[in-house]
Amino acid sequence: MTPTELVIALFTAAFVQYDPEAARELVAPDYIQHNPAIPTGAEGLLGAIPLVEQAGMTVTTHRVIAEGDMVVLHNTYENADAFGAPTLVAFDVFRVEDGLVAEHWDNLQAPPETTVSGRSMTDGPTEVTDLDKTAENKELVVGFVRDVLGGAAPENVANYMDPDVYMQHNPNIDDGLDGLMAAIKAFAEQGQVITKFEPQIVVAEGNFVFLASDAIMGGDPWAFFDLWRVEDGKIVEHWDVVSPIPAEMAHDNGKF
Image (cartoon, rainbow, N blue to C red; front, side, top):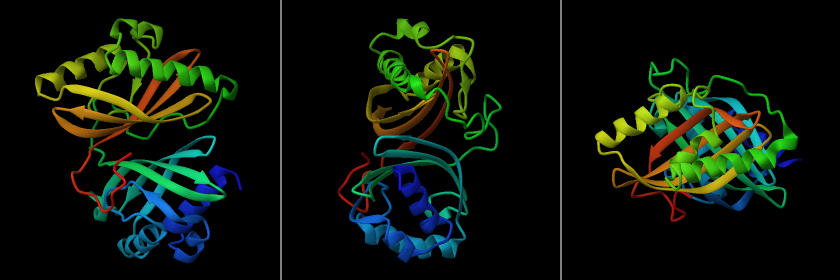
């Protein structure tokens, strides 16, 4: 199986069929877990399956992006109270090694009833296109994160995006560059200044580029999982899942 096929098979066995034995055949025994609430190792994942089945948790996958041995799923979980809320939007990231799923990272966020832009946290285009532009799109987005979000050279923002064409799915931010800048200013006025924004994982496929970043906001550790869509050499759309990093976890692997 390809990495994507392997990850989808594991995800289906665990969270659609609720079949621990089928899942066991697809996951490495020393599976590295970064979800703060689930113990590391294959047994930690397998032990969670009966619990999510009992809760009636279901999942809808909106997007799948893969590069090399890394696969990213953009998901919505329902009946997910065990993980923090009845409904949770998530990015799940998996690493494949030697024909088994070997590592998992995720970020979870409860979606609000309304959003500033009117878009949900998951709607919008899903088709992967422009596979021949994967490398240049990846370079574009990494540059945007470094210069604009990381603050290295925010004056270069027009190199990365059209100020008027930026469709926003973050529930608290409006469309366009003006919406992004207004939100950054408002967050700063509330004491939520970002003083660290360091990408830890980058996965790109065609017109989609995903980054998972280790951040400090308002003096506290946060995880930012972001997905951008690129069209004709410019960033045109953005989705994210943002979550504080807890001080205590069910393992010693950390968030990243």
